[in-house]
Amino acid sequence: MSSSKKSNKDILQAPRGMRDFFGDAFIHKQEFFQYAETIAEQRGFTGIETPIMEHTEIFLKGIGDGTDIVDKEMYSLETIGGDQLTLRPEGTAPIIRSYIEHGMGSLPQPQLFHYSGPFFRHDKPQKGRYRQFYQFGLEVMGSRDPLYDVHVIETGYTIVKQSGQNIVVKLNSLGSYKVRQQYVKKLVEFYTEHKQELAERDQSRIQTNPLRILDSKEETTVAINQQAPRLIDYLDEDSQKHFNQVQMLLEKIDIPYVIEPFLVRGMDYYEHTVFEYVIQDNDGNESFALGGGGRYDGLAEMIGHTKSVPSVGLGLGVDRIIETTHNNAFRMEEKKDVPLIITDDSLYAEALGVIKKTTTVNTQRIFLYPLFGKLSKQLSRIEKEGYQTVIILGEDEFKKNMVTLRDLKTQTQEDVRVEDLQTYLS
Image 1 (cartoon, rainbow, N blue to C red):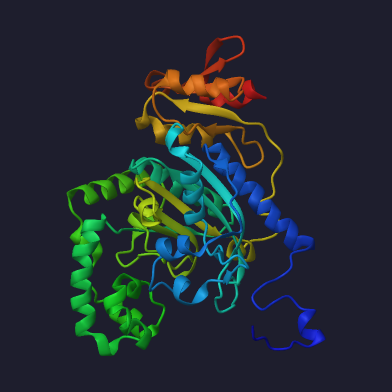
Image 2: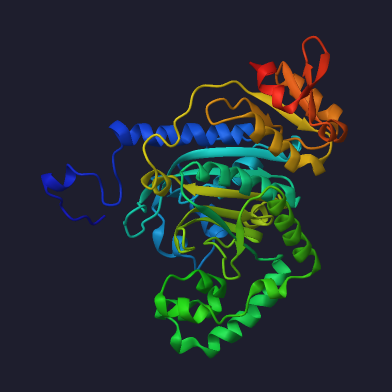
């Protein structure tokens, strides 16, 4: 093992690209995590924690060869016993590994998780980007329904919007695996024709991983990419239908978005919906992304599972978020939780409307229960989980601007006007 000897001055400083948190910085970070967890749990996500290291192969297979992360950014080592391990550079692959290992596919689907913690990439340190960085993430595993794409996007948007910045969602569809294979052929033809105009590193990706060229930050490549064929022009009927439903639901719940036809994200496992949260000034100029994510129906099979696990998720860059907000942006008080269930999936947007009308940052007590489906099934599971009160929103109640408040202990219930809900729960 070779090493360069460091002076006492060097070793008494944190490694390059890593930092200490204390005082206000520590409090600010903890307040963000508390706020993000509260918003996520209000929408039915539960916490999960995985080891800080995973088998290297998980990331090689999942993230993909030809990506910056795999090619040059992973912190990997070989143990004394010969195991190849890597400090986690992202959170999705470890969580789907956990889902598979613990047989979570046998539980009611989908499973909704939130996670947080430190991650590691040997990246070039700069403002808002560190070699040890912090993420807050969401994953929905076990459903292909585009409703969950929107559920993840809306939850993340609510979190980053609290920063006080003007946030817009950049949105694209990568289509199905079959669609991407057809598109990649067109992309290879295009890049081969413009090979000499690409940055040197991107030239080598034409045959190995041409989609990654679209994600390049090299100036010469970025200019060429504006002329490249657009993947959304090659979507098949099913992919287009999925994408249309995502857009329709986003519009219904007033989430601002723009179509970004060259958005591909940095991981090979994404398909169908991909998105980013971008800061935009009053003139419409964009600065940088605070996070993003997408759908990854094929990741489980990519890392060796025998079955697909349709999933969608996101990761938020905590370092960037807290560096662009004032210190008390995410401060909140302690609160209690009451589940809200809907009698039909079509009431998803209306349920979020009830939550937003009846809660504030410091008094949130209602969360959207994740098991969309039969009312009896939802009530049974809620009762088993120990909740005493549940709010029910059905078509008839919605038309009257009311909800049903049921006491699961006494099995009594009453109809309550939405604007009076907080009073009944206090």
